[in-house]
Image 1: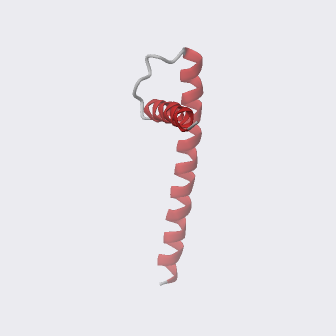
Image 2: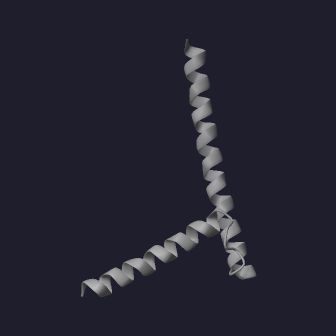
Image 3: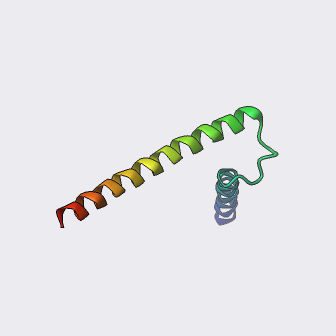
Amino acid sequence: YWQQEAGKLRQQIDIVQNANRHLMGDALTSLSVKELKQLEIRLERGLSRVRSKKNEMLLEEIEIMQRR
């Protein structure tokens, strides 16, 4: 039983590591054009969320500084 569970966990780790490599721009040769487009969309959405959060934090900092 434990060997089977360990095998499943190894497989999940491989999947997560590959996904991480793809997000970092590595190991892209194995992806199809459709998969690359999906990855691009995911990255654009993530980047948009990062920029929104950054802008939100900058505006908060500006408000704090203006109150001083």
